[in-house]
Length: 277
Image (cartoon, rainbow, N blue to C red; front, side, top):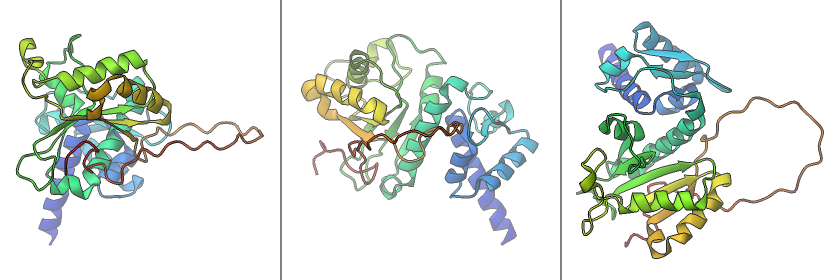
């Protein structure tokens, strides 16, 4: 029993270490969720063990729980060639939002049953050798659905975009066009990136949006005309927002409540509305 428990713990650690590497780093509450809903205190103890083994470092980088990231030794143990170091402060909110999307996907029964595979932006960037040219917009992730599973979208690849703040409609439309037109894998020769007549790499693009970004994304999709049918717009899942520092209490008159449109699908892996049943 003890040996089995140790092997199980080692397996969970390996998955969590690779997950942490792929996402640049994790706040401890999301690490706790990844580990099956353990407490933040238990996640902190796990990270302390990683740190003793030289695999990870941890520090409070902003409001909310501390973050953890892998050291060079930790990355080497995961078999990846990423640069070691803490996640960039300017990207913490975005990393948290994308991580929340990944956790929501991986918690869905349809994702597991269809053997879905999350390919992180960091893995895509590594294929480019860290160099992203003007011709390459990297999605926040790709979700791959292998052939041979009993779902209508088997064999597809979806591009994932988490939008916290609104870009311009023109910029968002240009990104959508690029993602929808791409035919080659990231890191391929420039001539293979978009080849007329070949099937698109991304069957669909899933936008997970904050209320602040939703309007711009919807307008950009509408600007694509019929091409926009391959764009799905949904709300960011719970837990995507960065914790904020407590603000001073100032008595104010409450503003009228505003109801945002409900864009959340019951299951992130539900078939997009354009997929034939």
